[in-house]
Length: 464
Image (cartoon, rainbow, N blue to C red):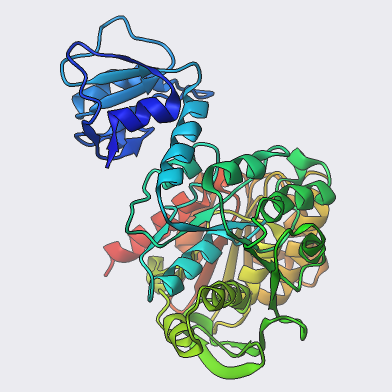
């Protein structure tokens, strides 16, 4: 268990309390949100762009925080039973504490990065490995300079393998820093795409920042790279350790062919592991999900799982993963893929929609942070939607590009509608949708399609 002594050593902070401090007193967990604090936790006061965590120290203490990591002391002294740890920078101190805690843990770390599919790949890898090993995974998308340390603080001596997502969407050096904390011995790179092009400037710079995971691996580590992505392939040149390839390419060490989508029932394919072939069915949605499975197979094989153990784990994967499929309003079926969006992921989602019977309705929100690729990306999505969807609803100002492209691609103009917000789109969808419709909702989080999906699902449940 983490102790006050560990926090002091990991952060090099100074201690302050209204009582004699017991350095061996245990701390249950670490939280940066006062609403998530439980008795015995360490609360880290993070100053943010909109809110400052220091303002919520009283709430954290009221919830039972045993210790508070802060960069300025409040006017009131620490109450009895609570220890204040004062540091110059709480974000940096959280990272230092996580690195210190990770150094005490024997766990092997698998790091995952890429433009699209990081979270799904993390989930599948962790699910497969957990069939044989005590496995920890980072929750949700805890993948930045705050989230990754929180994931590392969950490590315990019994954890054999930790599967951690690593972001890196804002500046060069971010993933390098995360690697310095987590010390991964296995690195998985899913792909390089136009996500965050607006921030990074060029796709080559995006590739360079993703390659920081590969560069950080130890000589006795392993780089697991997507053979089907040319920019990922180039990362083999900077790898200090052996490389294992996965993908559809004939030269991949772990590959798939004969990939068939069975709609909402999953996918089936022929899996080859170093030349040994098996026919596999997996309860994941969309043909694009095969890459996620192949990455997991490559990692599991490298970690000593035999073929039959791996295949059994793949067959038992949680269905859906990031895609949520629920009954919707008026007897429709809602595919909620509103977590985030890029051209590649929207095109993949439309391909899944194409594999499902009935009337197909695509509700597509703007894709953010595409920079100079924004127009081309939205046009490509519109052209693909014209080939797949019977009805198209766009939400957001960039939806005009998608809508016009769909009409140019042959979609009847009266089958395309544009909305500026989810509030405008909701009543129209509730009126138009009917039994047998399959509705795909996909867009960047800022558009708020998750709220629209929730409303459609809620109204569907209300009539059951």
